[in-house]
Length: 397
Image (tube, rainbow, N blue to C red; front, side):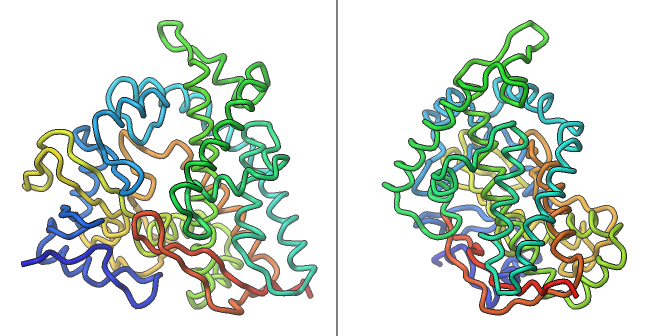
């Protein structure tokens, strides 16, 4: 029998494909066809978490990387953390964890709050419909990144274009465009890193940091780390903000509830992240096995592909009661959207903070409404992504 094609269809992008829940009950590790080849699809929380932390699996993105040893070596040279494992990965994470700690994120919060309220005030003042991702989510993310590294990245007009081309956030980009924009973006970042090596911001802190043996980071390592920070801090954050706003607007009484009790917002943000981990209803982490591994009692052979959908894991009823319901008071909430474990997202605290301050500014002062159809497109690995959300932000009474 020919395995079903993945990703599975769904009637509305915010709803996960019903087939995922069905497979979790009947065949939690199953064969599917993914990018024209067989792959193992995981649907249980425990199996997805195990895959995220399995050193025998290498990141694989059809059309971009194939999960080979040569790519793993190149990733190590370029300090690309998501494609690294073992001691080199642990070493780099220690440097970034020290430089991007809770204290730095807390210090950024007042600036992010001012930016969010300034942006929303400008939008309310117009009284006209706006496109929320371009007009609010993206500017907030870029401004926060600039504050983080003490450099105004918006001063370079091409930064947003390069970033969106490389990650195909607002539409599909061909491979030639992706490669050209990637070269230009990392050329810009290399020059930025060189100019700020003695500065008082994050880049200077990374250059000044040393490990237990007194060793530091090379120019290439700092450039690679800053490049990942800028890409991951802009595109995914803007995407999740748009999805979160759409879900708030389409969940009856949620905005009113959050406006009445702001203390619920951190819990609501965790729920929004659980339900929409960077793509509507689901977010896939594809891997290729670099050696034979075992997950959930199934033997994965060297060279085989594994798909670990965060959204499926985040709705596993073994861990989440009434998993399709948005519950701001849900405790505990052990969602996998930040890949807990060895590859835990280093910008998790920063992303949570931006979502909290952005949503707080957006819902403060009155109701919002979607005034047109959200626009969706297919992402790099077949996932559904939100590319535009037209809303009306009423002026203050």
